[in-house]
Length: 79
Length: 448
Image (cartoon, rainbow over all chains, first blue to last red; front, side, top):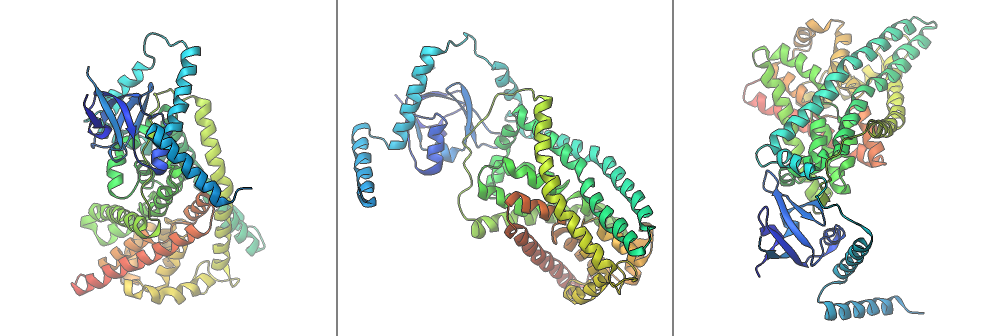
């Protein structure tokens, strides 16, 4: 199964989180918002200027910058 | 009892142990288990409806933050908010200030003369100044509350973050910057939506560089008198200079004053909701009240102080050459000589501009005892200003000290006198340097 970073995913692609890297305040914040391993995530869209991205996770919408998404690894789910 | 070192060693051992089992750091494991527990409980107790709720919210988003429409819609919302706040408040502000002028004129007639002047020019003027700010502030807070409660505020930050990030700011800084074109006070209060304290402080510090509505009368008068053919272009250049310097100062402050990364953008984009009237009014009142109490007292105090400086010693012409403020003006006027406007009349006008920038024009009118229509020619003939001097003076008026109400707001929002003092200091320096550069370089090029 193909593994990517969340920042590389395109809109409408779906995947399962395998690892949330990083450290510090932003890392904790990402985890607090429910971005934890084995959760399913869908990329909804990219902002008009190309950053940040909007994802759907645990039934709600979350935005984060690409620089914050690069450390989140995802196993792709085929549609 | 364990010593601190023993506790820390035990902690490190426990972390290493956890990592050897789970292959992940403690934070991730804790978050993972917490959400595992939550989903377990949810499975037991919550029954989800078959169809997905709030699908219509997603549909709205497909248009609102659309790749092509996202930015035009954002700009339209900003324009609407600006129009709502400042167009609706303009006549209200005029009525309030006309009402206070009406009372003040009658109060000046009270004898003894000093009491009439204190009540008319000082106290009623001071209270009137505070009250004229009520319409734009309360209307703006209504607009902000509607945007926040509906869920659009988060989308606005989502759309603008990339651009703001480039100039060292957060996506949420954009709205306060735009609002600054109307009035810096509500704009600075709007920075409360910025979570990261560093991002918020930088946004507050550069906000007075956004040319507020009160500075427009100065530009209109001087551009009309000195640049009749390029009036619009000259006024526009003031706004542009303000924006460029705001970006420059934001980069400088980020690098040297408040170094550190820009706050994260990990935030929920909540579903759209219809704001309730009660909710909006509560938000408006909670924030507006704060301005009235905190800023109001400082503003009224400074207005009375300037009244005192303009009236002393007893019996002089109000703000005339022999009043204390006239002496003060004469004393500091030489500082402005390198900028081209080293006359006491200019210095006194700038003192009054500290109360509210539009009074720069009114003060000159009072000093030359002419109506506003012929004020431009009076300045040109009596102070022998050239277009270059007028331009330098306009740039100085744009940049120097925020008005007293803005200073009071910075004090209230940062809860310290340090940051209003810093803002006054850096803006005065920036204004002087810019005006002097323009005058000196312009003179060298023979534009004087």
